[in-house]
Length: 488
Image 1 (cartoon, helix red, strand yellow):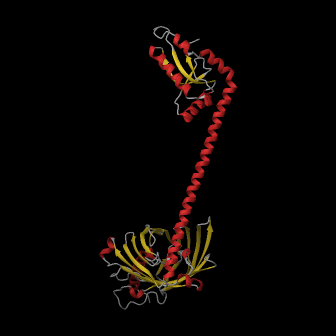
Image 2 (cartoon, rainbow, N blue to C red; image 1 turned 60 degrees about the horizontal axis):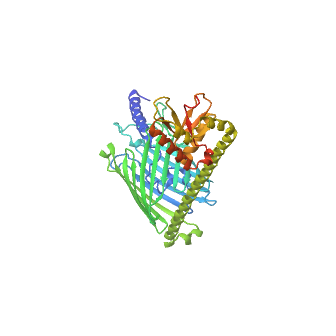
Image 3 (cartoon, one colour; image 1 turned 120 degrees about the vertical axis):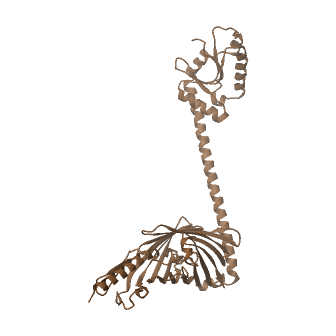
C-alpha cells in the first residue's frame, strides 16, 4: 500500500534525480583530449585516414577529488579499404558521470569524394546501440530502509546514430559532426507507476579546424580549434597546438574554455605502438574543488604486408622525410604555378589595355578625318601666327586680349575629353577645355595668357615646347595659338 509518507519520499528523490539528470545533460558524449591522435572520437568521417589499421584504448578520469566525477573508457578500431576511398571502424565506450552511466557500441562507415585534384570531402556515419543506466544505489536517502523506487527498470537501451563531414585541402582540415541524431527519450518509472523521469538524449554538434605547418625538416606545428554546441547550453571551445617531431613524438597545449588547460605528451614506439598522456590543469571556479584530470591512450598499428618493408625501423623516418620533401617541392611548384598564372593574367590584362588604348587613338584619328574640313576652317579663322603675335602691341591698356596654346579642336565635348584622357595617359600632359562663346567648338589647351609684355614671351615658349614634343601621332600637328578676342 502506498502511503502519503512514501509518496513524499519518492517525490523528493525523483525531484533530486530530475535536477541531477538535467545538470548532466551538457556532457552526454565522452570528452577527450586525444582528438589529435584519435579523430574517430569526435567525427566518424575521419576514420580510415591511414594505410594501416589502428586500434586505441583510452581511459579518462575528470575532476579528481570530486565524488561522482566523470570516468570514461573507450576502445576504437578503424582502417580503410578500396584504396583509401572507403573507411570502416567500430567504437565502444563506457562513461559514468554521477548517477548516470552510458555504455555504447557503434559501427562506422566513411566515403571519400575527391575533386579539383587536392580537395577531398569525407562523409561518415556511425550507428549502434546506447544503453543508459541510472545508479540508484548512489542516491543518498535519510531512510536506509527505503525500498527501490524503480525495481529493475533502471536500464534503458536505444538505437543511436552520428554523422560527420570533413573537408581537406593540402594541410588544412575542416570538420563538423552531429551526435545523438534522434534525440531519443528514455523513460524511467516506479514500479507503482506513480512517478517517472524522462532522460532525453540531446543532439550535440562538434566543429573542428586543424592545420599542419612544417617548421623545419624535423619539426612541424599543428594548431587546432574545436567548438562544441549542445542544445540549451552556451558554446564551448578548445584551442591548442601540438609540436610534432617527425611523427615520432609530440607535445601539445590545449585550452578548454572555462574548464582547464591541458598538457599532452606522446609518441610512437617501434613504429607500431602509440602512447599519449594528458593532464588537465583546472581553471575557473572548479579549480577550488579538483586537482585536475588524467587521460591515457594506448594504440597499436597493424600494417599490411606491402607496407612492412617501407615503414619498418629506420626506413619509416626516411620515408617521412621524403614525404615532407615531396610535399615541400609540390607546394613550391604550386606557388610558382600560381605566380605564373598571375603574371599571365597581368600580361593578358596589359595586352587588352594596350589594344584598348590603340583603339582610342585610332578613334581620335577617325574623328579628325571626319571633321578635318570644318576644323581646318575653325583653326584658320581663330588662330594667330607667331609673326602676328610679334606685331601686336602688348603694351596697350585698351582692347584686352586672351590667348590659349591649343592642341586640338573638336565639335563635341565628349571628343575633347577623350583627347584629354589620351594626352594624360600617353605623355603625362595636363590639359583643359575652353568652349567658344557660340557653343559650337571645344578647344583643348595647355595654358592661357592675358595681354601683357611678359605673356608674349611665355606664349612663344609654350608653343615651341609643344612643337618639340612631336605630338603628330596623337593630334595630327594641330598646335596653334588661339586668340579668343579675334573675330568676335
